[in-house]
Image (cartoon, rainbow, N blue to C red):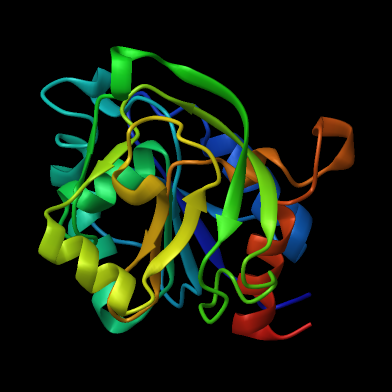
Length: 226
């Protein structure tokens, strides 16, 4: 696949940015551009922006809260508003909610436990750029590693997300206390996805599974074709 131009943002404390960059390069054949949180602008003509996992700013104040005020986030919000696809994984999901690109918030896990293992997810939406490569209702297995992955939103917001088909993934087991077992949500326009599980850690069989690969393949195919 050629012509795919992606960027991966790194914040102080990011620790999955290289994993994300490797996943994007392996699937698309093009190394993504690396962007520092202090940059004021994103590179031109971007097809895709990824906010990786980690512990931006040490999770001080709230996970993702300080990172959401980084200079680069003004450009990320502007890009998302223009329709550029944005993927936020784990800490990236937290940043997206703090920046107002996605509704809700990520709270401490139930029983205050860090969860780090492979978990089953049910695919709820297959109509988005990110999820078109899956089957509706399919169960996939993706690793998680988080302490603040308990998705919360008020009942009206949850009902709206459900009614608009914006729940992308749902935990197939009760994992961390997330409302309605939500593991990933889409923006109203469908071009922003936040999810706590790490698809970039599930793209090669040698690493334990490939269920995450289809997310990246779906995005690349939808943007530039096979």
